[in-house]
Image (tube, rainbow, N blue to C red; front, side, top):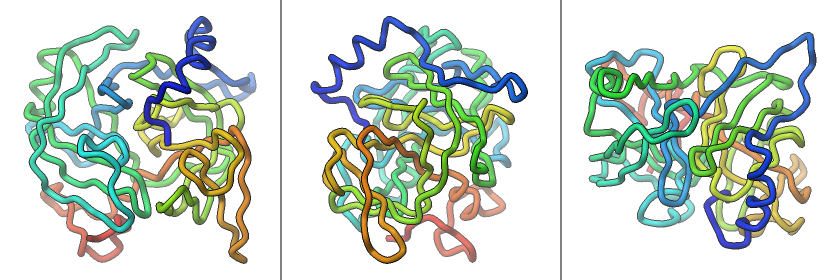
Length: 275
């Protein structure tokens, strides 16, 4: 998982001199510019200011990061948190990575590391307040999954850097230690994300909407161990590729929303893991 750890610092320092990390793009399919605007730096991970497609300006704003970035530590396999009190804070960034101010959460709306790897927080401020105070406009969570071959960007607020690449494919089951994730997003080699990028939004280059959340990669070439996820094939066999990075779907949130923009895990068609 892509939380910060000491072993990643040396590799990250070498890459830092290059600023933005970008993969090659086709002249016929230019990648829309993605910046660090509306990302949120946490103490151990990356995060972003997000909204549902149906959110309105008077709604409380939301912050999205990984389940394994939850302030209480890694969640056990099968564990789901819903409507838990929180006091998590982070630094809201502008387009160049400068600090705009501190945002604070008062509630975990949903968190799990089972099936997917997400923590969604409710902030103390509304979207209207953040826009008025900082000019911040939340990233919209797309209501559909990205296509194979789609151009994406992964802006990391922790490192203040951006990776550009394409969706290489989807993995029915991705296993790491005790956790299993479903329909994970596999990147091409240009998105060789590092520790500290956990929780970074995966942004569609064509729409600017969030189509996933970065969460892990295989560090050492090991099979299905911590920091070494493996792909579980239909016949139960596993494969692992050192350096391969992955993210998780976020459109699942939109399958569970009520008309009042709250999460209902019992709604028909809801894809989020239930407690």
